[in-house]
Image (cartoon, rainbow, N blue to C red; front, top):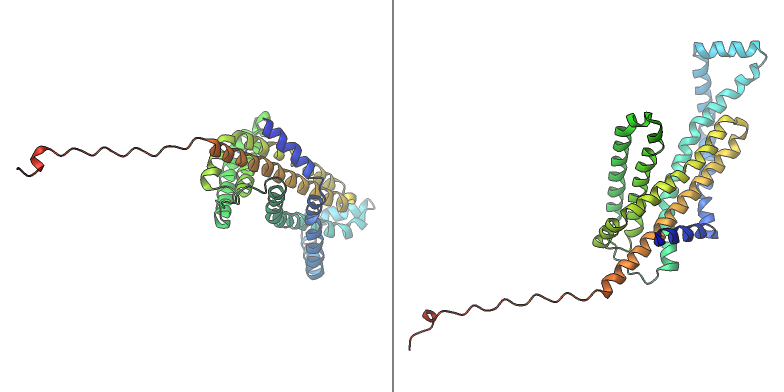
Length: 290
């Protein structure tokens, strides 16, 4: 419990560092760059396609007629750009967050290792290919568990428990592996997972619940279209900051657990080598007679 709380407060303190804050703004920069680039090349053709789709729908035509009858016909010119923005923004955000996740987690783990654990030997028990395979395998298992558990979501308490539990399991599997892949050997990583599985799962679940906060801001941006431009970037920044906090929490916990494990191994008495087997005495018949 002490390691759990100590790593929590250290991660919270590290979130105030200028380097971490700068990294948390990275997805906003990427999102703006992607938006400007895609808008420059594809905005007009995509807008014409959306307008053509709206004009071809009989239901939409009846809605246009009703809006014109109540004096709100000007909304017709605004709907197509809004639909395009709402459709494209989640894709841009997802791509930005994936890029940031690929670079942020190793950078934060390296920051923690450099400042707190510079003496830890790097045994490199996980390669890049193994990390990718581990993440993909864990993601597939989490998706299967989500699909299988969906009927249970109809029970009111379980919908608040099962999805965070599954995503917490996925978070701890991926982030703990990436944190330990550089410093721990394969045997050390397995031992830390065995000893600290429940605490690591707890970190994953708690950070999963924290990740619900940006969804509230995102939903507010969907409800209030006028504030969409401001609320969605705010949601992205909060989500990235939560991601940074989770990565720092896992880094502090896992590297401290690794340090403790190696200290225990160093202080343990050496195992004596096995005694040699006694030589069997040959019987008298094997000796030549005098």
